[in-house]
Image (cartoon, rainbow, N blue to C red; front, side, top):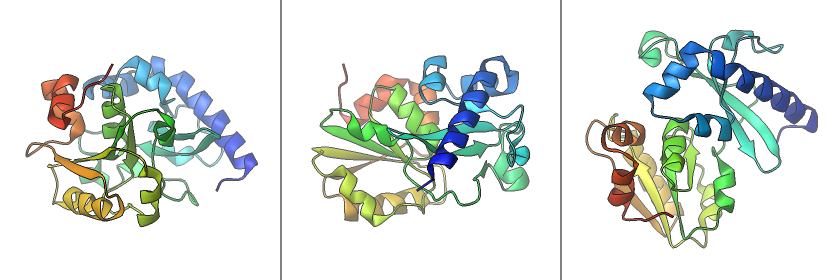
Length: 217
């Protein structure tokens, strides 16, 4: 767990980076293309690194995705938004600070009073799902699932695993791992060539809810 001083540093950095986002054309364009609203950006405290904090110089120009908890900011990832295919160009679409252990994204969703919750692969899919009115947490990478996380989902009538269908099958493997840890899990596979974000962009949030068979207020 991050120390109190680390949390304070992350908290200050996140506030600074979030304040820079609205006037940063590249970051706004990226979020708009992904269909993410200004309200979602504010709720998740998304930001952009324009004036790096000490030790963050290598993240200049990257989108900041904070890992928020009820106790404050416990870390952040830094996503490349300079290219359409960052991973294909330089193999580091995401950068993570040294010492930051992979953890679930958007854990405050676990405190929402709901009979169901969704598990997504990745942060953008999680934000997209939550924006559609569905409580969601994210796993930072298809191979990042930890079996003990299954304890967090006890009591839910249904845990929807929203699996991508745009990769090498690793998302389906992740879904199988989660299903072994979560008895009430139900896998919802996106159409071929899609992840959650691209599916919602093409079909709208109501299509996601219909695909899952859930209704929201």
